[in-house]
Image 1 (cartoon, chains in turn orange, blue):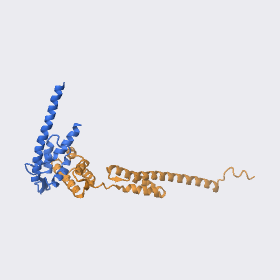
Image 2 (cartoon, helix red, strand yellow):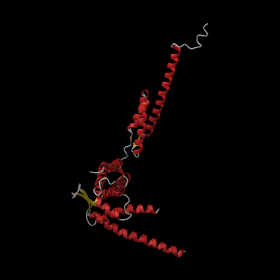
Image 3 (cartoon, chains in turn cyan, brown):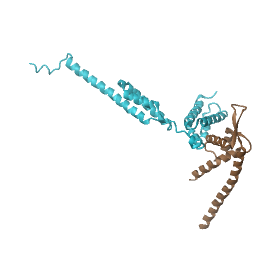
Image 4 (cartoon, helix red, strand yellow):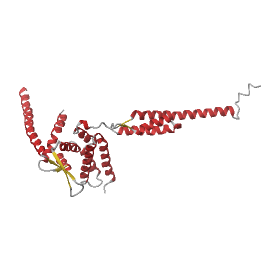
Length: 180
Length: 117
C-alpha cells in the first residue's frame, strides 16, 4: 500500500517521539503519541504513496519530537514530570564485566564491541541513558586485555624458543667449548 | 531580540487563537492546525498544538468527543465550553486594550523621535 521507505520515516519519527515522551506521565504520553499518530495518518491520507518529499514536509511541519514533548512538559504541572529514567546502558555494564573477566582475550573483544556500541546508544539516547564512563572503562579494559593477549603470546613464543634452545637437540655452539 | 519578543507573544496568544477558531463550531485537530498554519507567523511547529489542546481540555476550556469519519479512523473533535467562551471574550477585551496601548506607544515614540531630530 505505502512505500516502505516513507513508512520507515514515519515509524522512526514515532519512535523518537515515544522515547522523548518518556518524561511525561503515562496518560499524557499515551494521549500525545496517539494524537500525533492520528495527525500523521490524517496527513498521509492526502499524500501519494511513496512521495518522500511530501512525507518529509509533513513531519517537518509537525516539528521535532523533542520540541513537541517540550511543549507538553511546559503544559504539565511540574510535579507530574518524571525525572527521565536514566538507566545505565546494559551494554556498558556488560562491557566492563567482560573487560575485567578477560577470558584469554575473548572477554576483551566483546568488551570492545559492547563498549563502543554502548557509547553509540548513550549518545543517541538524548540524555536518557547513563553509563558513558562505564562503557569507556570497558573499552580501555578491552584494549588492555588485547594487549595482554599479545604480551602473553610473545612471552610464550620466547619461552618456547628458549626452552627449545636449551632442551632441544641443536646444542648451542658455545656450550661445548668450556668443556675441554 | 524581536524574534524573542515574537516567540513570547505567540506563546501567550496562541491558545486564544485556538479558542477563537473553535468559536464557530467544533473542529478536529488536523483541521484546526491546518487553519492555524494558514495564518502567517502564528505557528512554528504544528505538533506543539496537541499539548496545548490537552491543557485547554484539562482546564475545561474545551471538551472533546470522538466522531466517526467517512474515511479512516474516528476523529477527536474539540469544542468550546462556556468557560472557554468566557475566557475568549475576556482575552478579546484585554487584547484590544493591550494592542491599542502598544500601538499608541509605538506610534507616539516615532513622533518623539522625529521631533528630536
